[in-house]
Amino acid sequence: MRKVWIEVALNGAWSRKLQPGIPDTLDAIIEQGVACAQAGASIIHTHAYENGGRQTFDWQVYARIIEGIRAEVDVPVYPSYPAAPADSPAAARFAHVEALAERGLLEFAVVDPGSVNFTTAKTSAGAKPADTYLNPEAHVRHALDFAARKGLHPAFAIYEPGFTRAGAALAKAAAVKPPIYRLMFTEGFAFGFPPRSYALAAHIALLEEAAPGAPWMTAGLAVDVRPLVAETVAKGGHLRVGLEDAPLGSTMSNLQWVEDAVRLVQQAGGEPATGPEVRQALAALA
Image 1 (cartoon, rainbow, N blue to C red):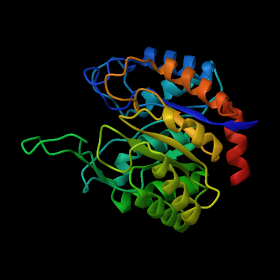
Image 2 (cartoon, rainbow, N blue to C red; image 1 turned 30 degrees about the horizontal axis):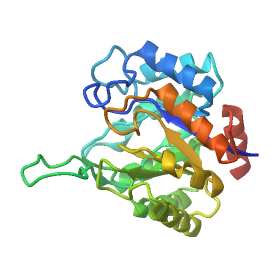
Image 3 (cartoon, rainbow, N blue to C red; image 1 turned 180 degrees about the horizontal axis):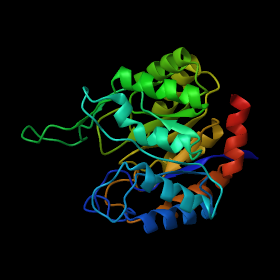
């Protein structure tokens, strides 16, 4: 039975106004991360909050979260990094990631290999212009060079198909370990593809051309990816769920998203991987 990685993205940068169920305190993030891992999640992704309110990129807060989860269950846990203007220094943007890696707390070097407008799928002429998520190539190269020096696998979010080609080219140039490609579907936004079979097939075909054999997972923002689970498992992929990715206003908890993902993976003939099994699979690719 094929082992399928189930990643849970616990919160994201959403406020509780947009996603009421997100954990936004230190204790809640650790508690939900542990519960999701015990239910079958093999990778935990989180943004850091300490006492509610705004997120933080203080490496010490992230360290407490990672250590708190790992004290209970052995799974990879990895952070986010801040949005930033194009003229901001890459070293400052990734300083917390590098601090965590220096302390042996990371296995993934998170970096997204392109920029995208977060235009909503439904908008109007008078709507406030959407934010642009900027990842200048200088920042991508900085993060990949760091990942190569530290022996970390890059964790890519593929918002647009071209991100796959750019990410593969830059990863090859940096001589980094094979990246993980998270294919970002959406219903609430207008980037990339909606969660459709044709879209998954297109992503896989491009990935096989640009980075054959690379690990990939079905993921997204403001989307329910469950209709793609059976195809994802059948075609050799993995899966990400959770309240960062779910449709805004989700009534399901992180734990419920993971439990349903486990059920669907098993129905499709897969079996959720453990954290150590994820590491073993990545080591075999290096």
